[in-house]
Image (cartoon, rainbow, N blue to C red; front, side, top):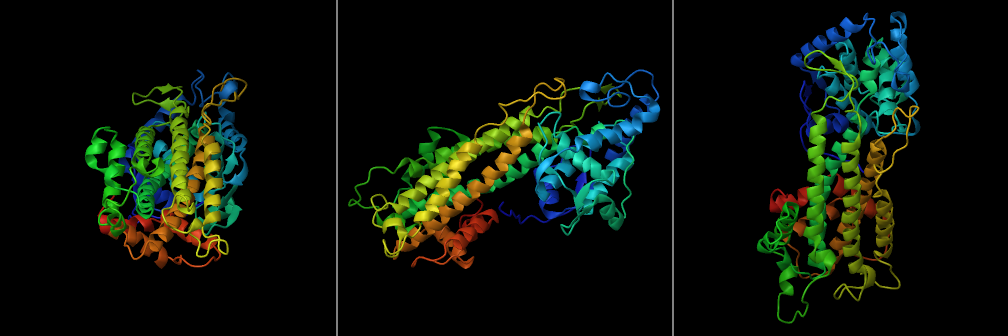
Length: 522
């Protein structure tokens, strides 16, 4: 998947009893920011742990403290077996399979579990929390697998693999990326494994942290890709001799969708001062209106913006949550609950896969118009140097089309499915982890589709010479050339040029180039 970067400085992330931010998640997941626990959080952790310990010798059964789990919750566990109960829980639930999950996802998951533990609502010991932090800060990343989570009770298997590492067991990757037994990695880092006590196994594995971490990362990436989508749309409208009149503010005020207005404003900024646009603002131009993929780009990208905004609101609520079962309430009760169910997160993960597919679809349609001599307004077929001898960008569009087709399949919701588990105790599950996994593929695919549009539109803009593009789109074309993708010419090995464009999009270079002219884009 594409490498994502940020220009924000990386500093320590302080975790207290309140929520961490999107920037905190990105800093820890992608840039190895160090985590510190606030004093007020440690005080709350100690207070809630005292509640759990007061119940440890109680003859009354308390779920997670003195009982089995899930469908086995009716079994009362004697005191001498309760440490084994927690170890057995983690070992048995660390049952993932398949490919390794990306390092940034695991680190995001770990930070979010730490954040919940720090609320004081889970009843873990301070030393357990601090050891988890030490593991994260040492760059030790437990090996988590692609399959295993049903999204209820949260992301059990992925979190259990992390909890297993906390116990000094299982397999991890160290800060250099080398795979080794956890015991060796802990010894090298000077970390002592945790011997779990009452309630701690449950507290370490019962949460939506995996799907939430992937949601936060996806939203972060989609916000940048939305700016790229406006850039590539502006380049396509310009190079296809389209009009920016349809992006006028008063037209969009007639339909006051907020995201649409923001996208239209971006397009106005990006196309301002375009010599190519001015070259056909004459009576000789007989075109009445542009195709939908050009004219309606703010309506589509705007609707995507609004969907991303809603998803961010849901993610914000989840970041402010203390997800565990049971929980220690603020007044000292230990209560079972259903807050681990991943439905709220799963739904928006699926929504985002839908809009990513549609944003990619309209981008591919704009690209395709460049390649058809009947629709590209005077350019060579396929933008080829010598059509017939050269194929130009013909197959680049095939690559786009293949990705868009894949994105349409990935847009099928995971959250409408449910497979009962745990002897029908967990009889309705969210499949949120699955929704998150396919969204990561969707974001990567959208990145590549937009990159190919950028590459093709840049070639078309240069073929309009001597007419000059707008200062903003011209700056993006120059950034692409400076990154190593050469301009128009005879056919050459195209895959590396596509990858150069992908990195320009994913790394923020395209947005930076445009904003150097326009100022901040929406």
